[in-house]
Image 1 (cartoon, rainbow, N blue to C red):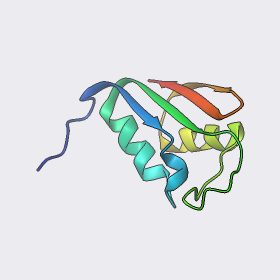
Image 2 (image 1 turned 180 degrees about the horizontal axis):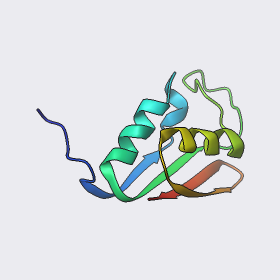
Image 3 (image 1 turned 45 degrees about the vertical axis):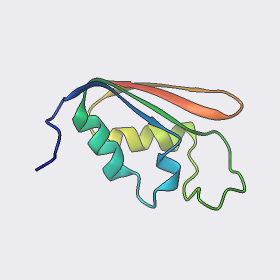
Image 4 (image 1 turned 90 degrees about the vertical axis):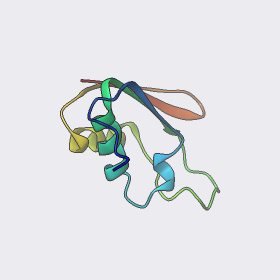
Length: 89
């Protein structure tokens, strides 16, 4: 089919997306599958009034999600507006 090969991209960016999903794990696993070096993730840093935001992540819950998605190393940082993570394999 139209499926990309494992490791088809050096870097996959998942920006302001995971919070919109009822279950973000499958999307993150797919990003891990596609990336051969790094995944960059950003999510809002605090709850807001956006009704389309189905998830709220803390550094701890984001770290837990990364561990569940697969073996990786990651660094999470925070600004006023968002959490950013760089995940490497």
